[in-house]
Length: 191
Image (cartoon, rainbow, N blue to C red):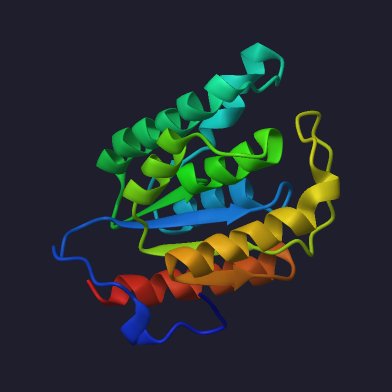
């Protein structure tokens, strides 16, 4: 469910007061996810999880095969589970296995059931969907600028189907950052 201002009752309170809140940034290519995750982590003096697929696919010359999708989803989850040990109240994740499932659809028109299972198992307290109102930038690895609307729609569908607490981040980087900081502060108030 996308909302402009999540109601406090929608914020899922974790059972342990000292639990680390997990915030995941999702969206199409070139929407500012990595920059936001890194900057939010600096702002909140905590850790963040980079996108595992980049380091995994770089030695493969960015060629992604069917069997790579589960390796990427599992690698992302492992990296997150390791980095959360160093987080301070909140962990920012630049993608998740659900995102891998959407990419699986993009490349193979179907998704590995193991990726879907991992996507179902991973839980986040809040999602930020980064809007496609940023100009697409070709960084030499991106190949789906022409599919940004498709990706955005697929993420909206997943958010709705999974009933995820999600805030749409639009506008300039400064506007996105300001909105994200406010929403994370609200999330942390329940601790």
